[in-house]
Image 1: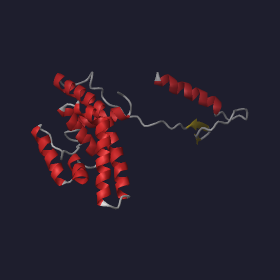
Image 2: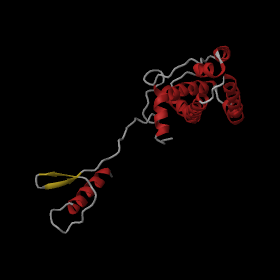
Image 3: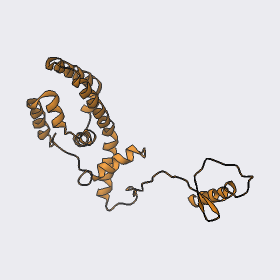
Image 4: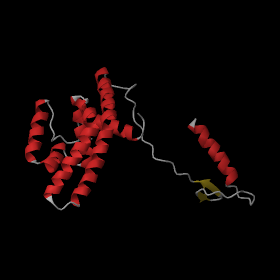
Length: 196
């Protein structure tokens, strides 16, 4: 199919860029090579991925990839939203001079966020929570432990870290797209491109 489109494009360009005076000039880039005028068309970048649904090393790897895609698709919007909200909150906090007013503002923001997202986040599985923490690090450059420590203090951050540890997680987890989080990164790229 692509071959035919290229051939048709070349045939059409031959008529559009002929050397006689009857041709209609179009706003298309062209290269003159000797006596020939060749169209120059910029194409968008294309990335090719092996679809792991058909080509996979083992059934276990395929199942892991399927779960990873599902989990990333579910939690990635929350990571993006968290990044945007933290940026907005940091900007507003920079304008508040008093420490007392800052604490009031943080508590008000926390109350609003709990009302909006608490039920949704409670329904996440442990694996989805772990992926969410990694994606928040990917989007903000800060671990969830650092974020809680900045907003609520070291004691509360340590308390939440202990609770996460009980469930086999860590709030200090970082994102490694070329290592253990390879599948998560590929799933994020596919989500960003709108493939699923």
